[in-house]
Structures are given as structure tokens and as C-alpha cells.
Length: 554
Image (cartoon, rainbow, N blue to C red; front, side, top):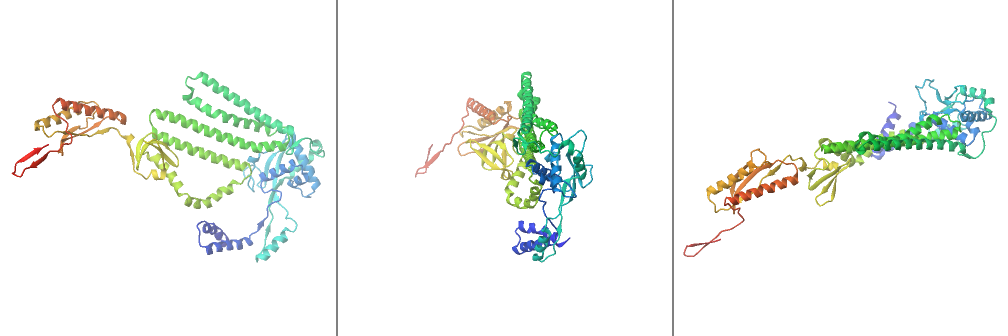
């Protein structure tokens, strides 16, 4: 691999990772030395590097009625400026009379054009001339002539740097000779010698043409919007519960943006060949792409929200709360992706080179990852929470020292409503690493009280008390049959302690408290009927007299 390429690859790594200054300086200086021997391609002053930039610059020249400049976009061997200006006027009149150019966003933005378009590699179709006969407007790729004195300047600069200079002509796109010949054949028919229509111009086009184009777009959208409202009104009158109907939800979400998108499509079909100024037509067709991307993003976002709401309502009926959390997370992720795609497309419509920015993400990705470790950790944690399902929205749980009900599981954090009605937000990276106790997952509740009887009873009465508690557990329908028991646990400080161990077969916490109270009341009543009293803390003190006799006080 050449030394210059190796150094170019090492330079950004050294700079990003903060390598030693000497190494970075070596990479920069070596790269500069390598650039001194690289052939230089000067940017074309007329912006003819790609088919898209060529057409856009040509339209700007026609809008300014700078036909001398517009003549530079024709591949003329004689380079006659008068002939070029005449051809530019003829082209504008032909396009105004029903010709068309491919909209800005559909033109190739690559220096090589579109390889698989059915034309030779150095040729690109960008539209057609107006008239009964189909005549394509073709661009051909050629090399631009260097500006006077430019080569000497480059040579002199290279000599000062101590390297060998080399200059390379920039390939440019121009209107091909076949299209020029067709324009010249129609020169008399188009009256190209007559100046372009004068009058009240707005941005190089008659005001009436702007009014026609924009009025058409507004009229089509208003008509489709009214049709959408009529369809939704009819469904509301027909369906008993339209808000729970999947068809109504889908149409309610889809029709408004779909109407805007359909209006753009109708306008594109008519507007590309409308008998109005090509300047106004091409401008509107270029920026109508923004409206179409906005409509697509609007449609996708509303559709995602409608589908998520429908799934959430249906899963809520069957209490699939974890699935609801997954749907919420997926909905937000899809909406972010849609917005990102729409943003990139809109920036491309404005002529901003998004490929350079995307490529820069590869170089800056490492630095970004090092600086955003917590963000990445939280995103991974949110995926783990949704995939592992330790909790769901609506669960009552304890996370570390936080006790409350889960309100939301987001892409970055989880919110818990505490018993004090405050909201605690826990980053998902920290949340997934904590000990989580989910009280909502209990299938039954433990009933494990200690019943203390007084010491004054007989052994038979103690056995009777144990038997009474066992019978209550066996007879109650809400107590699990999984070995309920009552056993003498120990001789306590002030009572004979009987341990009760059973499970209450309910899943709701409030309901479990009701049955727990009922069981305790039954135990107390049955023991009282048997003459057995529940003990309370007491102490017996023995006092010894000097003569040895003991006196008991209690």
C-alpha cells in the first residue's frame, strides 16, 4: 500500500484517540507532502460536476435571464457565446412550451451519473424538449478547459513546496450535441430570437405561473382533505364504537397525511409538463419533495401511533402489561428512525451533502461512543428490561430502596410512582443492574402469624388451641390446600407461641388483607369460645425474704 494512503488512514486515528503530538504532527506533515504530488482537481466555476448540480445551476441562470452564463452549459466546440445564449433562450422557450426536466431530487448527484439508465456511461438523460416529437435532453460528460493562468499558478505553488506539480482538468456535464442540433432545428418554430416573456416576474418567472402552480396544489389538497373528512364522518355514523374499530383507527391516522401525499403525486403528474415557466415549475417540483417527505413521515408516525394504541388497548384487556411496555419502546424507536430518514431526505433536497456527514459519523463514532457510554448503557439496559421482563407497567415493586408502582419504561429511564406520590426516575442502565422485587408477580400471599396463648392453661387446652387453628385453616375456602399447619413453635417470654403457616389463594394485595383479617378474627373468636385467651406481655416477679420464705408478686 502506498505510503501516502497509510498515513491518511493513520492521521484521523491519531487525532481522535489523542495520540502523542509528535505522531500526529508527523502524520499531518507527511499527508501534506503526499498531497503536494497528487494531481489537483479544481472545482468547476459553473457547478457542472454532477447532472443534478448542472441542471440546478442552469435553471438559476435562466431565472436571472443570464443567457451568456447559461450558454456555458452547452457542449459547443466553437465556444461561441452568442450561439450559446441563443441556445439557452431556445431551451427555455421549449421547456416553457411543454418540455420537462427531471425533478431535482431524482437527478443523479454522482459525478459519474446513473450507470444503469440505458445510456452510455458518459451520457445522462435529464428531461425532454417541448413539442409533438419526443426529443430527450441529454447531458454529456467532458473535460473542462483550465482557466487562463491556472496551470502556471499551480506549477509555481508546487515549486515553492518543493514537489512536482500536476494539474488535472475537472470532468463536467453539458448539454449534448444531439440536443443542441434538435434545438437549432426548432429555432425558427420557437422564435428563439424573441426575448423571453417580460412582465411582472417573481424569482425569474411570471407571477401568474406561480399562482397557477400553487393554487393547483392547494386545491388538490383541499379537495382530498374534504373527501377524507367525509369518509371519517360516514364511518362515525355507521360504526357503533368507532374509537375501538381497527378500520376507523387506521383510516383516521392514514387519511390526512395520505391526502397530502396524494396531492403531491397528482401535482407531480400534472406539474412536470404544465405549460408554465420552467423556472417556476422546477422550483416548485424541487421543494415539493419536502412536502412529500413530510407527508410520508406524518403518515408513518400517525400509523405507528394508531397501531400501538390499538395493540395496547387489546393487550390491556388481557393484562399483558409487559407487551405494552415493549410496544411503547418499539413505537418510540420507529418514530425516531422515521424522523431521521425524513431529515436526511429533506437536507438532500436543500442540496446539503448528507453523505459527507454520514461518513463523518464513522470517524466520530469512536469519540462519540467514548463520550456517551452512559447513554449507550441506558439504551442497552432498556432492551434488557423489555426482553427479560422483570417488571411491567403497572407493577408494584421494590427496586433497591425505591418502593412504588411502575408508570413508564422508556428508552432511557424507568419512572416509578412511590407511596408518597412522588415520581422516581431510574436510568435503565442502573435499573437493570439493581435487585428488583416484583410484588405484582405473587400468585398467592403467605399467612404466617404467631398466636400466643397464656401460660396458665393446661396441656390439653394447648392441644385444643392448636387443633382449633388447624380446623379453621382446613375449612376456609380461600386457604390453599398446600399443607396448611399450626404448630407450637416455642415457649415465649410471656406466651405459648403457636406458629400458623398457610397461603391465601388471591393475587390482589388489598383482597389478601381482607381475608387475612377474616382468618385472624375467626381464630380469635374460636379460641375465646373455647376459653383460651390470647396472651399479652406480662412479667412475674419473685421477692425473697431474709428468713428464706419467698413472696410472689405479679
